Amino acid sequence: MKKLLVAFCLAGLGIAAFLATQPQLRGQQTEQELRILVPKIVAAWGTLDISKVEPYYAADADFSYFDLVPMKYNNWAEYRVGVQKALFEPNTSIKLKVNDDLGVHSRGNLAWATFTFGADITSKQGATSHLDGRWTMVLEKRAKGWIVVHEHVSAPLGGS
Image (tube, rainbow, N blue to C red; front, side, top):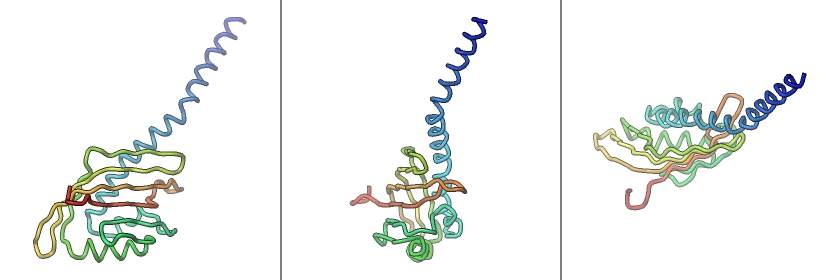
């Protein structure tokens, strides 16, 4: 009987130790999900098709989005129209590359990702340009998964 009690206690300690690590494991799983999701979001921008980008962004609330031009969009509806006009319409190609500094962090149902990127852009007139920039996404976990609720894209003064 004593051996059985000791076995149950040891098993209980093992279960307790496992349960104590669950928040950390969930955090690691969430961060791994985001490491996969963020490049997909960036790739969607490279399609020059706003309908491919839109599923990743919160359309139901008034969140600010900060981009290269103009300085600020007050909600997704403004962002959708502005990006189409300023970024997609004048160009035939945008190739975006997430650099190796992607950082993801989560706290409950909120997360943020930060990274630098390179963009190779070809205009409809055939001119090519390169832009190095930085990107921050704030995401919220919802019933259907993670969605961007705030974003800030910028380029350093002087180019890089």
